[in-house]
Length: 383
Image (tube, rainbow, N blue to C red; front, side, top):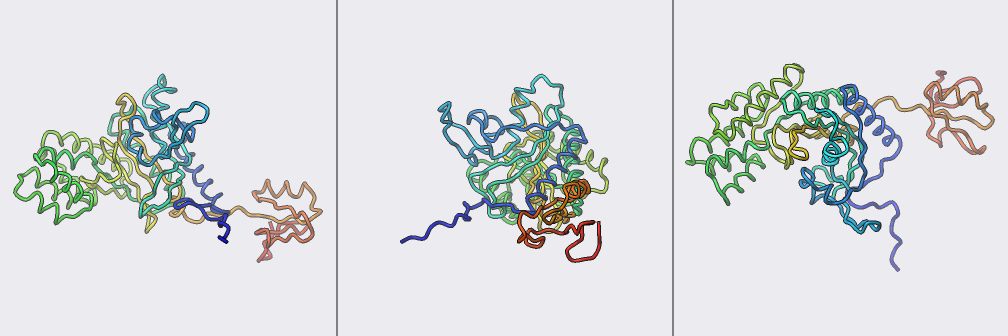
């Protein structure tokens, strides 16, 4: 006879978030949203599910393979469960908010679900919080979005932040300008993605000065102050010059507004930026916390210029210092209602005893009401 399934077992990539981490994550997300609002980004809340053709249009096509699909029993049409919120915000900007003045500043927070995770990030359900600027084409728009994201995580007490700037279209522009075609072009792109300098150098040897820029750009990745020297537009083919000129303008705008921010530049980084058309950003936290955010320049509906940043709540939670936990005060049976109200006004969560067997320790309380004050369970301090 087979054993009954474990009710606590969840599908791969899904997990429960328990107290007190669930509350801490919610508090951090709301703090991020408050930071966005301080800069004029207005909140939108799109639905979890949309009709497939709308959800996967435009930039949404880049996450089509990561999107769960199901049949709507009401309309008998296929629906998709969002794998990313940016395409939804782009849809809102092009439809419900089409008449609003540009640039349009929007922010959002919510859960997304993906078909599969990766080796480095196996989670399939993620909480995102982010900002999108729709209609701003100037380099200053990219700089603003990047710096609003940096400020949002900095206000949580996260230190050691670095902003990596990538150019998703540069590698392909150089490969095409050098006349490199398939299958070598594909192999070269994969070598660049792996950061395999020796393989890249071997594949471009003898293929002219434009192809020789690829290993040079790969080696130039690092602190932006030094890396920008490689992006001299005069050295580049015509198709790549606007990419470099725009990147230089964005980096200068960011450095001018945040001179203390650590900025790195990778001229041939394109991994994970399928629909981006200009500069792309990755925000890293200290140590092994991983990517806090990703984003950059893309085209919204009707080729409207847009730029945005998506922050990942799980990474932010790992990077943020442990803030003060909500204090929980145990109220023995018979505690007057006004005592509980007074404690809640002082910032406590109150946990009322429902039977004589309830105890403060069993209910994970930090304090206990002694008839006059809240007493910490392990000290003699009073509140």
